[in-house]
Length: 343
Image (cartoon, rainbow, N blue to C red; front, top):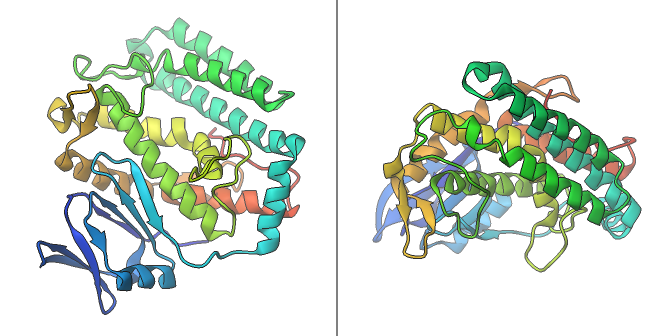
């Protein structure tokens, strides 16, 4: 099993990254302010950085360390890539399946059924843990609907029908998301999912978590030789990591959303952690991003039992495990893609 190493997050903007021996050096105005050994890193993510030296970029490629650059608000900008790696036969088979509508639908249906089931699990967990504080009948109705929607997703006759099922299920799930927020209700409320840009504190947290998960899925898919830009559910367009976005669907409710709810309900975030722009956009402050990333890193090391492997796996390794399983299915080693479905 792959070992989960550390991810180095550069959360403060205007830093420059360079290489000194086997260390990444962080500088501010040409003055070194920190250094980290490369041997225990599997990724570097820099927010609002001035750039990185070619020597460091080359070393990261050589050592298989992902190096990604994000904007100041957390949106993805670019990532450093070396020579395309992986099995060309695997990638060619991936492309064949992506071009085959029936085969694409088969994989996409599993992914969306898993997403809906995981959304239902999140609702059921709130019912179990906080039944005295919520409208239990309302939650049970939503849970029953999502159970039925997951079955419908598996039997969809086309991608368009599947997207319709997914959209309706997402609407039902998010209709009780505000009820799952149990603390700080005046400042943390959820009316609807909005993005590009997020317009409230909760959506700002969700968008940041989804962005981090997309990067993790991209790295995982590339590590097993798959092309993260050729997906089965999300449409292809230049620069869009369609397969990574497909995989993120499995983790939205049970990894990203539950993490965000925990931050709010345990009061790990506060209204002062957000800044509102003139256009209404809401983003995390620099200090809040640092705190978020520190808690996210700890969260990734927590172990859960993988429902298909029946083994304990660190949360941060889940995208890698799913990428391996998807590669095995594409090679013909599995009868179906075993989507991550929390039980």
